[in-house]
Image (tube, rainbow over the protein chains, first blue to last red):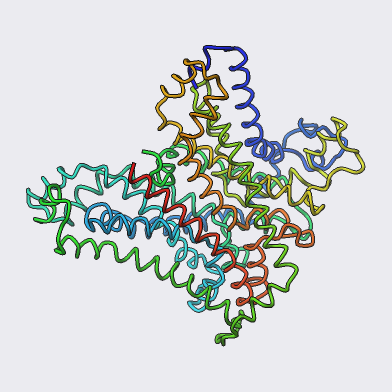
Length: 283
Length: 306
């Protein structure tokens, strides 16, 4: 659209700025509101006479203090980290070899199996959670974060395999062939050449897996009930509410603390994630 | 070893060590996925023809009884209809919004990186937390949206809209919040597609006097069609099968007015303990999923040909 600015430049630039401005406000406002709410005194939050956009009383850290010391928030954060670390490990252990096999070794079948693996990504948790809830209880894993460590790779492995496959395909075949002429086995090439060359792809998968673990809601809600064993995504909306009382200040603080680091990390790797979603429709 | 050396030259290889190693490297992932997706997928169908309940180990088959009883249930009919309204309405909003936003973001401007970060937040933040943020924005008493509307004299102070309490407004809220969540995702997908369109084609059209709107509708949008398809297909999946926004905002209420198939499956099968009926409800998502999967395959196949 660059050339469109030859005509009516001022009007176009204004329309452009307006579009960007409106969408930024619509999409970003809830997070701005979380920020304001987290630091407002309770009396200020619940006084209908007050203008909600300004601090009528002094800002306070009381909600954050409550969140960190009087709730299980920190415990949920740790649970989420532990599950994340284990799911990342399982995902890499399964997806790295699978992706290499699809990219290089299975020939014509590679393409079909690759698409097959991609399709499993379309099977939603809300179809599987009922049978899985019984499987989990048969395994004695209900109410344990290990249930999630077991189940989460079922959606992180397909997507990671798909992403890594693209990375491996971009490594020049000649390089691998030369290494084999020099005496490495095919598996040796994978371990000593391909994996070290794909560190940025692996990092992408690590970040992506971590964000998926943090965002997941349905399985965590289904498999785990006790307050102490919750993940962030379920613990915050369910256990920061007592009866009918919402601790809005702490709730909004929790949402913000849990969202921002992931958003920053995700943003760094955005383009790579997107290439995994475009199904080859973009070259 | 010879396999790899030949691989570069010969496009077809016979069944040799390459295949064996490939199978061995692929098998663990395939097995994991089969056990945790394939098997439960089959079990979901099995349960829907059974009388499985939470707490009892065994089950027996009851044929179509579950389907007969859920088809009679008003909650189910409401949820089925709502699922389609929810999906169609939010996809319409998301596709139009994302196209406009992607076209705007495709042009370089100052502060684009910061804008992109803010715009992405709804998609990247855990959706249950984004939804609880909206629950506060739409609160019956302290809604800042109502405060603004009251001060602009658009609504009456003592009769403000009950966003989550009124059945029609609750459905609208759920649709809008879900669209808010999905819009960034569709936007970045479309942006990826836009960067692949050679810039000089729309530019040449405008130089030839086609004008902004004609260029948009006759050149740019048609060229975006494959990527619009991809964004739409993912959007349908992520909407039709999601229950998070509904669960956090309204829990399906008031009076089932925002109940959708996945949330009803959860309330029936998990909270209600009736695994069989819950599975029967969730199985109703499968036909649409199959259609989307088929369409996705066609998009992928076409991309290979081009």
